[in-house]
Amino acid sequence: MHIEHGVHGGRTVVSERGGARIVTTGHGGYVQRSYVTRGGRSYYSRTYVSGGVVRVGVYRGYAWGGRTYFGYYPGYWYHPGFYGWGFRPWGVGVSWGVGAWGWGGAPWWGYYGGWWNPYPVYAAPYYWLTDYMIAENLQAAYAARAEANADAVGADAQASAGGGYGDTQASGSAGVTLTPEVKEAIAQEVKAQLAAQQAQAQTGTSDNSAAAPSNASNQVPPALDPAQRTFVVDSNVTAVANGQECALTAGDVVTRLTDTPDADQMVNASVSASKKGDCASGQTVAVKVDDLQEMYNHFQEQLTNGMAELAKKQGTGGMPAAPDTGTTASDVPPPAPDDTAAKALQDQQAAADQTESQVKQQAAAGGGGS
Image (cartoon, rainbow, N blue to C red; front, side, top):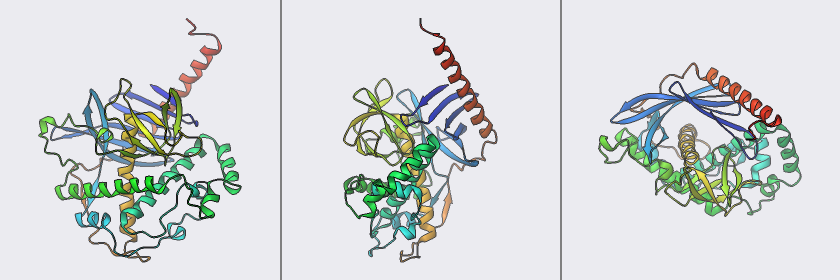
């Protein structure tokens, strides 16, 4: 069992037992198990449990460099025309203010509103999706702060009211932390992923490579793909800068610099944008490949969710109507949720509590000094 505490608080516990990978973070987590093998490729089921909500997804295994990484695999695809609509300009600008988004009055918006400027007018769906995904990540960052330290959130609210991020947004200042250049890099990544998903929808599989099945177990994971450089942080991550640990939180942006992991399975990345108290923007940090892969996975899942929102809202509020928004089931459909996941996560949290208590007792008694 591996237990890691974040720089800003919070705890992640990872264990492998009984053929399952169990990961707990705060009050939730997931249980991952082997699912099916198709064409020489292994797929895994993940059952997430958080706040009493259960959801399940499929992840593909990537065996690379003597390790296995896990990549998000969609449960369905939209029809190809909808993806094409998503990455091409509308031809007319679409205004979609804070009221249309429903952000006004939300605590996270009050605190992080000045982190970035939402586009005043959307020239294409992928720009709308970019703001959707940024907002989702900032909501997650705010929720993580609430879970890790309720008192800190109370202080955040006061800071927001008296000179925090909210003032920057309210004044209309362009001095936001997430610069237009970094935001454009995210938007271009959204656009590229929509184009890739369109190709996947046409073939009915998320693997468009010409590799034979015999090579299927030896393919670089997306986290190390030379074409994949921009990553949006999805949860609290500990990085290392100049030998010192620093934090990255949901919504921060990093650009991977190196493609080959070191002995600790870490690669170098540049911090493109970060919040107060996180790793400083412009720093070069070492980050785990596993963490980058989870950022990619979350990005893919958020993009799927964002497309679902676009499908609901297209043709309303001045947004042009989209072509066929129908869906086609994936070649590897998600399984039923693991009904033992909630208990496995609870048991792991209890075991971690006990382990940490024992370690503290041993330290207090001077144990392990030899």
